[in-house]
Amino acid sequence: MKEVDARGLSCPEPLMLTAEALKSTSGPVKVLVSEPHQKTNVEKFAKDHGRKAVSTQKGSEFEIVID
Amino acid sequence: MNLSDSKVKLGIAGAVCGIVAAVLAVMGNPGNMAICIACFIRDTAGALGMHQAAVVQYARPEIIGIVLGAFIISVVTKEYRSTAGSSPMIRFVLGMMIMIGSLLFLGCPLRMVIRMSAGDLNAYVALVGFVLGIATGIAALKRGFSLGRSHETNKMNGAVLPVLMIGILVLALMGSALLISSESGPGSMHAPLIIALIGGLVFGAFAQKSRMCFAGSIRDIILMKNFDLFVVIAGLFVVMLVYNIATGNFAFSFTGKPVAHAQHLWNILGMYIVGFAATLAGGCPLRQLVLAGQGSSDAAVTVAGLFVGAALCHNLKLASAAAAPATAEAEAVIGGPSIQGKIAAVICIVVLFVIAFGGNKRSTK
Image 1 (cartoon, rainbow over the protein chains, first blue to last red):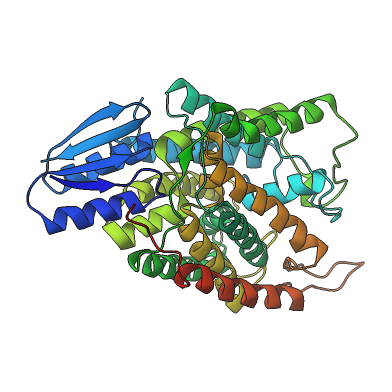
Image 2: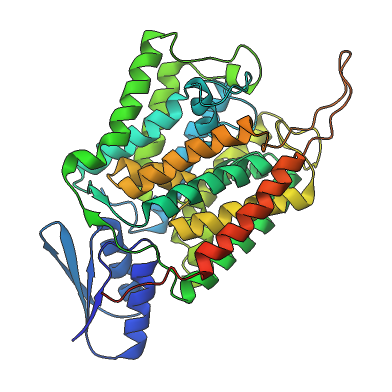
């Protein structure tokens, strides 16, 4: 699975990296972010592009798997 | 409560912030300023004696309220994260430049929108510069610009700015002589302390939940064709537009507007600097206050840069003068930037290009 590590990056970098990854593969993408608002942004971005996103909290960080 | 899952909720959040701005204007804040972040940080810097411009010194409870409102709501909703370490000194310099650009135009992006809602055509001219600045910042982001990763720090670190704000609030509530207060000019015009504080708390909480950001709203449209953040700004604009029309304050004009000047080139360049620097810093002055409130020391360092930038602007006479009609005692003033302000603007633009395109690249690690 393609992985995007966007932890600690400022907006809009997590979304730019997610968009890049989704463009480069049709398979699932795992995105790691640190901030709750970035988690929401990535989930919404996936939904807006017709993809399903499932998030889990890992400590204080988040892992979003986009199918 | 999640505000960012629907455009209607985001619009309402913006409208609530617009109502706060309108109430503060009614209660005594300066005309077309209402809750300008740059102006109010500049006033607070003056209250702390960081500059001696006698007409713009007042510890604005709105600034304190925004930081504390974002702090409280982020703790309650478990969004508080104490983080630091993403190029703090570059962010400090970006904060300084955001303030220099804002005081060249005479207002931050929030005040630009408030001025637009009153029909101030200079603000529409400045918007062109703001959009161009954001577009330049996006060009840098597309080439891989990054200020690097922040990391979690101990919880107390992220609470330093909120605690400092509480300190200023305590001094203000005690009526301490340590804080300087203007006796005339914009600094002397203010809503009662408690109302201003409550207004700031509400504004900060809604700005935190809606992710309100003036630079981000235009950035997301250009970069992602996403209008979510724009809806928040639109909500605020509509409320202020209704308020201005209802109070007879709305009229399209380049002149006769409070604390404004009609030097088009410098209005454009001022907001170009703000848009460019805010895009590199990840948010406008309001967003920096909110991020600082929710634990980001990097944003708090940017806010410190805003304070020092404000002090520099008045100590070195970089801030523009407002246009003023002739009175019995004084001749009319055209207003606009000083020669020092013009030089500072050119330096800021050069420095921004160096920061944006000079090697601050995203690391894949």
